[in-house]
Length: 165
Image 1 (cartoon, rainbow, N blue to C red):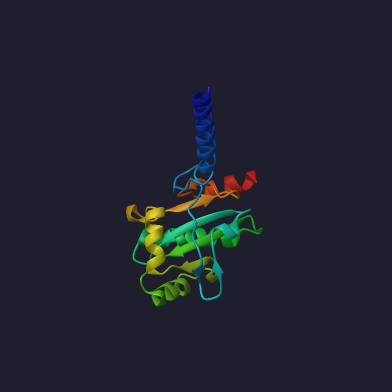
Image 2 (image 1 turned 120 degrees about the horizontal axis):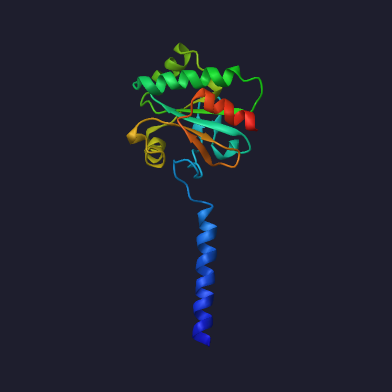
């Protein structure tokens, strides 16, 4: 009888541990909790992805040497500027090795400095793995609970999610 109770107790503990852990699984795919991005700097603010919970957040990765990601950064920036409400927060992360180049591109492309963040090489290394940036730059729409609901969303997709709000 003791042996049976031990097995049952072990099984219950394992189920509890697995269910508790499942809420913290992070992966850069639709349906998963977005990996944290901490303490980025744009010369005026330090910010983290978790600090933006409660709103839709569009996390966009770009680099000045990658034309597709740079164009997407401009499109997302214009879209977020055109919103009259505060329903979406743009969190645009630049991975340029040179911070001075990042600043020049932000000015040249007329990007909103408050939504553009540069990440240093040490932090970029972790993000490259978390968000699989080696496979290319992507954008992630994160819902108010921190779950990724769309990868590389179009402006039309963004509009539809914000309309559901």
